[in-house]
Length: 128
Image (spheres, rainbow, N blue to C red):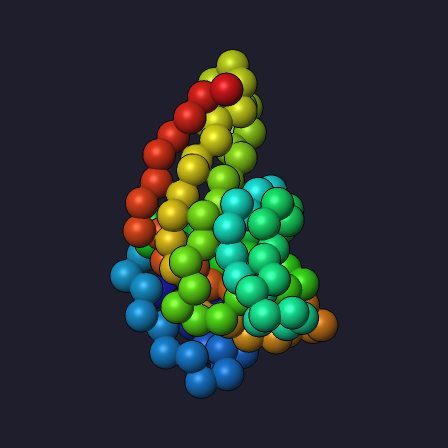
């Protein structure tokens, strides 16, 4: 591993604010639109959902995804969402939708927005 890469890893580790990295898969900094189908927002009225909110991924791994969003979703909350993969990226004629079900394993504030880490428990590809 190059010294530059080691420095980058050290910088990323410093920015984790005590978060222990438990992911077993590399993360890819991919920004894709995500349609949240269900999640519970902690802020605001009790039980208020963020259903239908469109958010963006910050990074994706084989195990999960990190969203940037305005609402706080508590750790342990179930989340259903759809990631849209552009047709030209996946070599298809139309965009491919990945319907996912997961749970929040990390939630933090950074730069005025929430970071919400979700482990993916189930997924299904759909071509539309």
